[in-house]
Image (tube, one colour):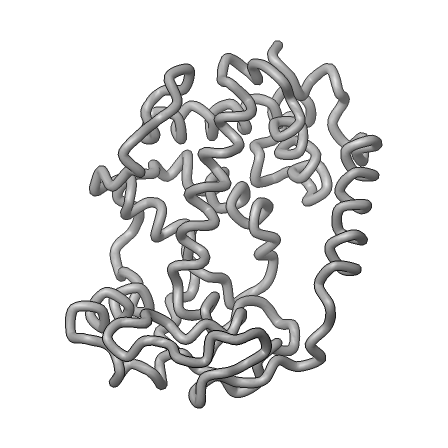
Length: 241
């Protein structure tokens, strides 16, 4: 599956108006040491080769799952699929895995096969071919399952997915632009650490609001969704057959 490979700076994910208009973390590149700069620039450059870990059969499900977890439904997307594929191909895990879950590489393969199997049994299609609400319901079912889901420990599996997705998303400069992060602190450091203070290079947030009311609304919406999924996949076909 081809995706456009962008090598631009000043980009934020999706099409929403940026929270920090005009901010580009790569403008701070000159303040980082050479090793740090090389690492960050590589994340922007991406790769011109195809997947090295995921097979052509696994790639569509992996991309759809990551889009669902991160709500990345529009371009530009942070290239989390490419980052995770490189991690798994190079054997760069987190140094541990759950005792009841296979090691990360086989756990990823098994879970993608399980997503495709669940979609096939319910709709006769693969996971990436489901409607977006049905994809979300299936992922939400894994999150809410207390016990095994299709032979895998659901809670630990969901944490595996989310850990890889979030780590790859927030390691990318486009995500830093989105949250107004100034990038690596070494060797420059930060000095204005008081609440609501900004460093000279930081941008003011557009329409800065108290996050608590938003969080309350988000948690309420999540609870309502968990209590009544969209019903696009029958409940008896979401769990272990």
